Image 1 (cartoon, rainbow, N blue to C red):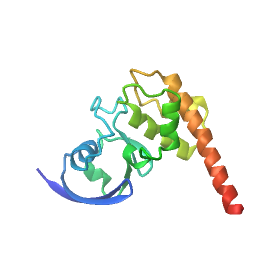
Image 2 (image 1 turned 45 degrees about the vertical axis):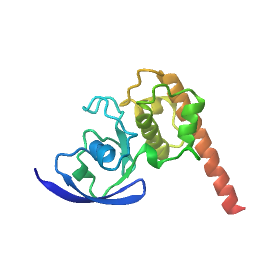
Image 3 (image 1 turned 60 degrees about the horizontal axis):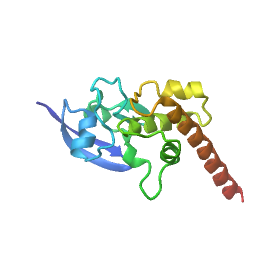
Image 4 (image 1 turned 180 degrees about the horizontal axis):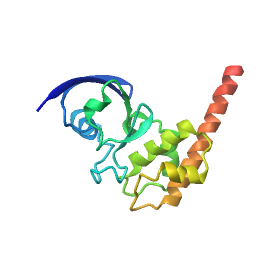
Length: 168
């Protein structure tokens, strides 16, 4: 088996490792870095439970090889908030009961975050399209869509307050 030395930035921290050429990014994150938020559901890129952001784009990490992420920036659910300060999208998921078993939640949140970074005022149809690669068997999609809409409003409000503070 061939190995490669790679360097990538994961949640803002640079990681340099030697990895097998056939190792998936999901395996690298979970088994090497102990970042277990991304889950393996189907192993075929159909469920979205393994979504992470690679250079701010949602990627099924079960389908991407770690060597393909060499030189990239990877964001996992662990990199967007923590227990003391949740990301607005995480807070909205809690407030709108968009979480039940939680298996799909990290992928849903990261897919939603990628959308909101590109489009801070998405329509319901745009949210449905952005989340179309994510499956949830527990919650139902209404609460998830409501959570993304609420987070979009909260994030726009935070951005407006930040602009006001700068202009004083």
